[in-house]
Length: 112
Image (cartoon, rainbow, N blue to C red):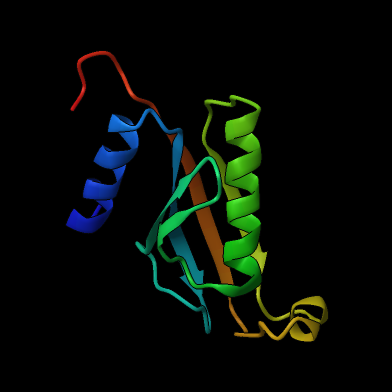
């Protein structure tokens, strides 16, 4: 995780906010961001960083917020096809596929 996201995660911990980290773990074809792109999502939907914007990012933010509200602690993997007609109607055609790993950040006792 880059320094900016680490600082934002530390702030979230200090403020006792739930947080999840979204990471692009695979990108094929024309994708909005490359493998390794990260985004920190707080429970109220505030984000830091980006995994590409548009419907892809909106879907991941919604999933993360939902999982945090349900107090889910497991990680999840999501696949997105950015070349289909439905995405085109919303203006998000890149033509590739993206896989995103979404994981909760667990604040343990005594962790910094």
